Length: 344
Ligand SMILES: Cc1cc2nc3c(=O)[nH]c(=O)nc-3n(C[C@H](O)[C@H](O)[C@H](O)COP(=O)(O)OP(=O)(O)OC[C@H]3O[C@@H](n4cnc5c(N)ncnc54)[C@H](O)[C@@H]3O)c2cc1C
Ligand code: FES
Image 1 (cartoon, rainbow, N blue to C red):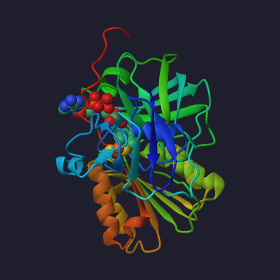
Image 2: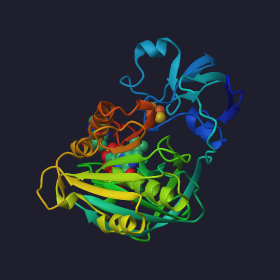
Image 3: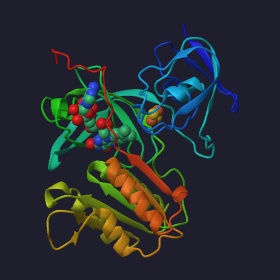
């Protein structure tokens, strides 16, 4: 039996199945709620419960403390309704962006290639369109398991049938080490759901932008850059891609060709451990060297959490207001629910 869950101030209601996270129910009904990770690590989907019964699902105590639970807070991406409910997101819901409803799609692997150290490009040809905004992500179901993992689309949103992803291997990881780098093959069927996420280029902007990517944090940047240049949405763009060594960088020729065609786009790969004839040093230090002030600019940061946090602090020192700094941290969750199935 499904329950009615109402957003108090917006007055909008979603039908939530007993085993369905509340966030999932709202996004499928086309009602946007703030969220960043859908895995219980970021806390951006916290809501206050006004009335009704629910359980917290797999909400980790590190993200939703006992004290917050006692105050009547829940994580929208984890909590399940046990009765009709009224809730209120604690982060303001921006209503000037048209979001695409969350939906299930399926497709087959069309491309699987090594592009950098422990990094693969995965292209999935979908049976049906998945519309999304540049910078958003999808969840991919790891075949043969109950695990879902988040991966950002690298293709521009004009391509809705063919999604490109960049995956970095995590030692022992269910999605990467045990599936994508071991068992996956061109032609395999894959299930996905999307679009998801609060990170990306959701509206045209007047200020120039610095994009800083670590490793596969390049994926959403590739989507944002292509979309921004095709539609003229950002006046000037600097893209920094950081890696430890030359073996960690990829798609350099693609971005160099884009920079040749678009004088307002600048591509800056940086290496923190190898020496080469390009930029050397931590990617954030390279940005600090290049910009003495970031006043009047915005930034998009994506990749490992430590890099994103360091870049955010560096830009603040260069007088970029935090409200103009958009971040996506590629966090990994502790997953208790996804043993590898024996059968493929
Ligand atoms: C919004 C978002 C977008 C993302 N986009 C991308 C992207 O575009 N490209 C990309 O490469 N990555 C991306 N990620 C990261 C990605 O979703 C996965 O977390 C990553 O690929 C690891 O998944 P895995 O299944 O291989 O590893 P997992 O099996 O999830 O393991 C991750 C780590 O946790 C440990 N671990 C697992 N379970 C437990 C447990 N129960 N207790 C203790 N430790 C445990 C593992 O040993 C491992 O070190 C994104 C993450 C988010 C949140
Ligand atoms: S904790 Fe729910 S979206 Fe991140």
